[in-house]
Length: 357
Image 1 (tube, rainbow, N blue to C red):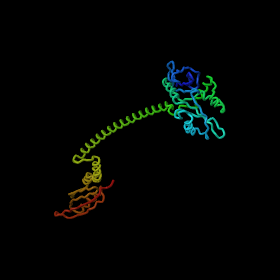
Image 2 (image 1 turned 90 degrees about the vertical axis):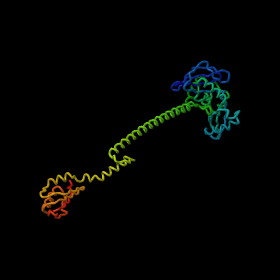
Image 3 (image 1 turned 120 degrees about the horizontal axis):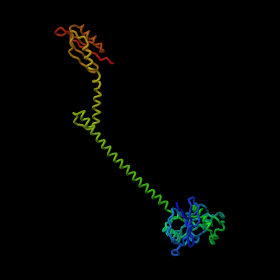
Image 4 (image 1 turned 90 degrees about the horizontal axis):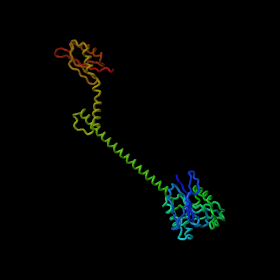
């Protein structure tokens, strides 16, 4: 990242190169300023705009006041200074850009140095720099910083009135320190450095645009998924309908296949015991193995696990023999009724239950 420190002087501007570790090198270029329009930046050749630059104003461009306050809170002082400067500065405080530095305390009063520059002069300098691609991150004054940091408090007023020369070595050393922490920064109010804010704003716009694209992609994917699920649901309903009509072709009024299928399953479950309780074939097979000499069976009733057998035989002893034979594969066998027919045969009725296995 290229960094430049611009040292604006009375008739020229020096460009100091800045290394990656922040050290300021010797002056690389000295560009004469045009006389027209005051501090108009008019380089004689093209320069590649740096990624970051800093600006120092000459001392003669600044004005100063030393004021006294009963408190030392610089935030409060900065807030009330416009009212103090209105009666001192020509045109009022709204026509200047100012900053202040606490000098010290004397007899319970705090001495404050106020430095200011007219907005017109500062605007002209910044406009000229922007045309060449320079946009200073902060605006200080190497000469003022040198006086404030190198002179005793009691000599500051005199040094501001009659400043001594500042050597190139001192300017480079002060520039390196100002880049880390400016003594006074005049980049305030309407002249506030905005490139970082613009970058952040641009970054936020880019982020917002990406977020919108991601949201649109998500919505598109959701719509596609919903359409696919709806088609799958429709196909499934059609398949269920076909299956239902295949199982229950006699149902003409079908409103909800699943509900009606559950109803049919419940009905079948209720009848399950009727189908699985007694095996008629097993009963008939057992009867076929029974000695039926002089016995004929007229009726066999199978109801769940209850069995009723009706028949006729020659004598009651034959009925007892059949009862004993049935007890081989049935339980609870009993002769519930006997009577004599017109042909003098014994009519009997037997009941029994299937043995539980």
